[in-house]
Image (cartoon, rainbow, N blue to C red):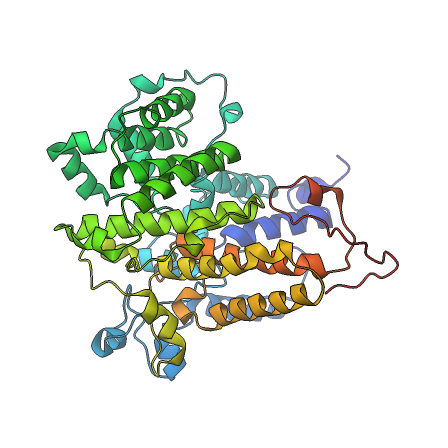
Length: 478
């Protein structure tokens, strides 16, 4: 109100100025010349030099190089998804994600910059703020946020919720494969699943209701409880067939209920699936190898290892000391990479090959699923630590810690990040790295002398407080 008319659009408090710049930093295109002009008076020659240098900075692109070429210090043409040198040498090509966010992706896709999209609009402070807010509001959310089921309470009352039976089955299937399958890739790839559904729908009788229920969790306009009860009824039938598809249905429904905080029911379903799998001898490679269809054989391998990894995660997070598959002898071969699962299935690798990777001369590459299996195998050692104390506990913690460090050190460079070469989130490596950090906390917390907090006794994810007394006068950590 008291500002002169000619400065009404430019006078801002320092806090507002920093807020705008901080917000614009999330969306500004650094490939184009910087269009923000300093608001304070500067010398005309200095301003001209500054503008010229900033324009040059915006025009110059930083060369990209893939990880293998960078390691060998050779020239890289930075072609996507594989550079020419890696294609010629037969190497696995991957790129690190840009620290400036989406700069290089925007340039590769030819998308207009913020400067170009806002050209011709007013550029006063209010408009800049509104442009940023609108850009953030309409931007696609990260995949990790999209993949989280919507709770019933989060649905707006204005939505007319459809009955589960009235929902389009094709839409539910699309939701399942779009949001759930990447993190739990056990079911047949989508086109193989549809093909089997058309030829032998009876074999999917108990699996399809589970897929429909999981898909409904990602649709705010579809009622999930009906579909959940329908899936549970199908799996509680007396004449349920003991086959791989039933095991898969029990596993997927257990995972879904676990994510909805139904820990007890989830544990029961996963245990049922485990015992049925052992009765079918799915822990033997012969079960999968007798299938003529290599894609279905790969699905059976993934189902068994899905039971293994899910049991390990549930046992660790719920402080349940039973991990039966850890003590079960198995020679099931390891899963392939996700892109291979949807194309041509290669020769399956074995657990022996995975364990021998440390002593090989050349770096070995395994699938993301295999590295998740590897760290879940280490968790079997850690689960029993709660029964130890004193010197035995310290020795066991040191051994498990060495295993975890060894797992981390022997990851190939392409698996040390949770983003793949196309900057897509690798859901399985994300779970593996989360498991690594959780286990580090799990094994070292009982030996620490940090203060206990009340949440440690009520949270399912935190370790139980030590039963022995700790010296409260010392504030040191193990």
